[in-house]
Figure 1 (cartoon, one colour):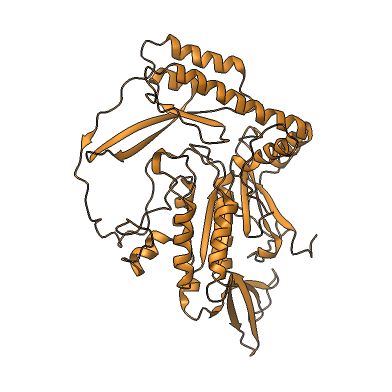
Figure 2: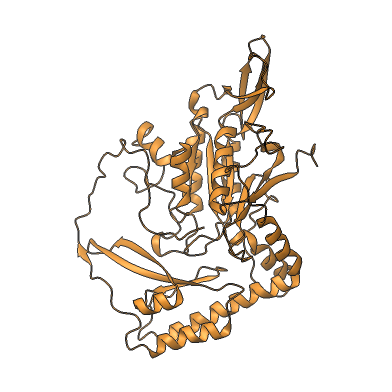
Length: 446
């Protein structure tokens, strides 16, 4: 396996999928921009051995330096760790680069200036999936100008539980990029002090899948589909797709680890050599955080060993049945259709609805999310959702108790804030001085 470039490599995470996103984007940034690690033989011998140095290759195709500046793309339903990681690792968003270099050239119809993040399908009240057509238009706009791209897909988004169609969107992007100069690859060149030269190719587009929740269980739903146990199946998201470069998932969600942990995986051929080989730990430092919790792999292995595939399949189908039951009962509580804005994204293990009163929120630990939008009269309106996840540990008794508490409450869903008149600016103020946009509302946690 060590010499098999088509093999996969990864490690157990200490921090959960947030660390997986950090490591994935860090690797993506250095890989697509043509960075390379080399042994620095010009230095005096060290007791620690040879010194590794990161070097920057020169782009040959394209001939401009845009290839050295990766641009990242993620949807407005992405987890908040992504903009935080982008700031930490100094990766520029398409909003930032677009505003600085191409302020009047946004390829999306109807936009004055660049959106902060890739729009989701049907906006804030949609299912939470990325708009594949808009994503493709944005990515290919930048790759056509020589930029490299890092594309992050959600697979089980934090609040809505949405699954981006990685296959559909990824294939659309790759088909368009393949038509551009150089096809799917950029060519880089390194000139060494001894007169030798090295030329190599790198992918123009790195695809990372944030599967914090969905990547841990959707494969079992696919098994049920193949066995004829359900008509439901999610989009393919894993390394069966040749353009997927890295994936992360959490161990404390579906698998139920008692503390945060997870798994990061990538293709071995895409892994850059580690920047250091510390004698202290006796192995190359191939992780993001350095320290690793040696107990988490045992917990995950114990879970996998004790839960055969058949049990996992049954658990997924049971959770989906429970969600349908909750949805049916909530609809019965509406005095008029649509009053509670009860919504479920296909195949998600969560249901969202109008925020109930604070006591129910506390008793059942419901997460909330505020959606801000403009109504037809130009008023700024806030609507607060609550959401409820059904996991393997959820029981019928818990569901019945929750529904009983709602029925017994004289005002389970109190009225929310009235619309506040606000003049919407026709032209966005210049924001080029800002490095990026950081969300100030929820999106949950990893």
